[in-house]
Length: 213
Image 1 (cartoon, rainbow, N blue to C red):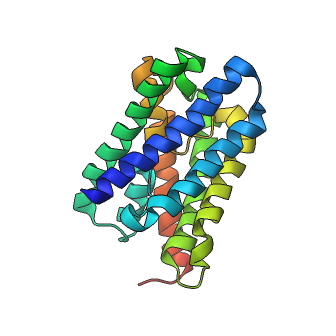
Image 2: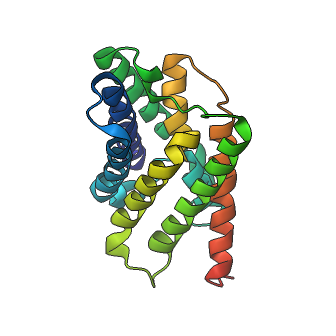
């Protein structure tokens, strides 16, 4: 239960700070694209430091699925983690709508153009993020103390150049929360399929790279 609460809190913070930054920028134009990207990266970093030792700091159903696929997380616990993550994202979206109003579709992710490029971006960005996560979270040769900085940096970097194309979600919960509360499900399948396929492929690849048997 403590791990589930930690996942709820971490995912809530991710959506509240990240999607909140999108909404604030849409209203005030004070943050800019770089500010929004930094918000996503920094909130991931600080929440990993805050609750990573309690739940593993997944905050992302695709990451949980990838860890389970690579046998670094018990498969029977996956549905409970998914539930906590989506609940945290929905709760944050409700708070954002109640406080800031129906601005920028609550930070919902939608393709800038056609679905194809956005799907490719979500898959590749998620794969790159998962490679970083696998390296710092499962490999003793990596510098574990820098895990939060590396993962937060990967999220921020992806948001910087991938945001204008696909929204750089890399996280089904982050996309589902605003979509459910805003009632906007445009091309939502991209943000469910792309991150899951990308993270699982990257986890399997990293297992091979480190020669696990």
